[in-house]
Image (cartoon, rainbow, N blue to C red):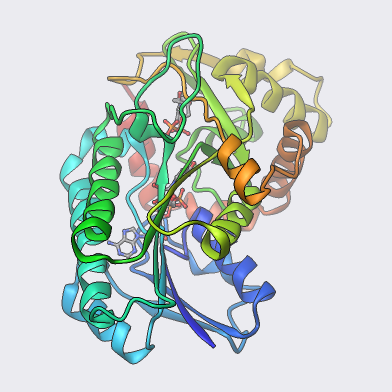
Length: 349
Ligand code: NAD
Ligand code: TYD
């Protein structure tokens, strides 16, 4: 029996990872620790919540005493840490909460693991899930490798970079067994509709304006979320202690091109004339400090651990659009109340 603490398991990527681990490993006990911010939603886990090897604990990762108690109560032997504030635009408006959760929260977890494991590190692991945004921005060419120097630009990426440094510092200073992965942009079911893909699918359905930042020329490298969860599973079991792995799908898209694919797909599935929703495209003021291009080189993960993305992008985006069209209740629940206020503050100018 392994007792694995997954933090942020009620969020987008966390919920896919929890589902994968609970279903694939009946002998592991999966403890999902999440404080349920606006981005955390237990409805994301309805299908597995009654499984015998699953437990949910409502807890703030910054609450050091409570986190320590969880390590004791559940005899935690591994951590997969995803809990974070994750949206760049929110980090521009409120950087403090990003430093608090992403830096101080990660530190609280590291310290709790160090105390609980007390130098007995055999069969223990602290796996930190991070982002390619710590590497900064690329020009027209090149890729981020595991050797690329950190150069974060947004408060979000600065806070994630800082948390990565703390994880490595605990490995180097205390011998805490750690591993880190840095992944590119994810898409798929259960993503909160503040991020580009679910936000735009929702707006296209409702014939609302599509706020494209700047000229829509920024490039992102998109990976289907279930492929990310599979990569985490592989790295968790086979990754080398103290190492870093980049995760990405070699799947770069200019925002405006991706937006046109989404428009065509939604229009077709809703029986509208394909492309007719392009009239909704509205160019708005660019995001401050907007990184031009992200592109991940995941060769190491492929060559050392044999992981590859399973889905072609066309298939992934079709599946994703269909999921949002079929799960209107989920979408309505997460876009009621606070979301309206967020949307107005973010997009009314
Ligand atoms: P998300 O915003 O959908 O979910 C974050 C989860 O963390 C939520 O369930 C939230 O309730 C929880 N949480 C936030 N603050 C907490 C706190 N103080 N204590 C306990 N729980 C807290 O995020 P996501 O997109 O699923 O990202 C998960 C992780 O993966 C993050 O660490 C993010 O940096 C990283 N990542 C995300 C992407 C992406 O494209 N979304 C890409 C690479 C890496
Ligand atoms: P996002 O999903 O926020 O991910 P990230 O900034 O972490 O890469 O944004 C993806 C891209 O889409 C990014 O270049 C910003 C752009 N974007 C818009 O043009 N309009 C929007 O309303 C949003 C949310 C994002």
